[in-house]
Image 1: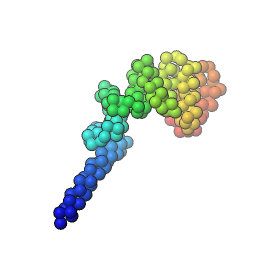
Image 2: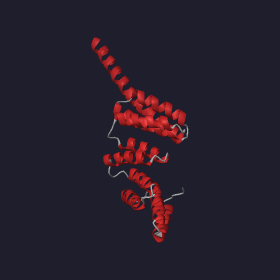
Image 3: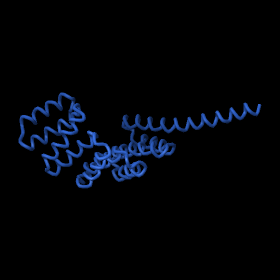
Image 4: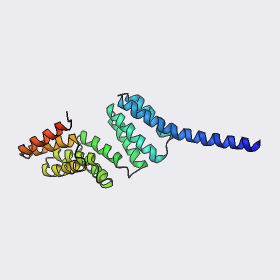
Length: 195
């Protein structure tokens, strides 16, 4: 009888532990769903619950998602804090560096953004989105040839990256390469770019 009780207690502990791990994943997935629905405050609450139940490595990803929801609400300082927390938990997580760099770029803080985006690219050289943002930063600084190289690399990695094709067209247009720019605009439109 004691053996049965001990086995039952052990199973209960294992099941409870598994449920806690699953619960963190459930909260994270719920946060993603809420974010997709535009329910950013609720998404943040779900990500907070996932963070509380996660290991450090998993929490870093939840911090990134929380930062993105905060960005959607215009809470940029809090978003930066979330990205910094993700970087603190996992300094090799290129996506955290990327999100922070992208936000800096959107704020026009180009030199800071470039440093952060370069960190993301160093960690993940085939990171098309980071190369795309690097191209945008360089374009904003009037460095069109360098911008074109970064953007071309993003397209090489992901040939179906519609926004990169559109940026390529904009850069080519700035360089006076109208025929190539028109072809790039057409490719962006073909891939569904509507921005």
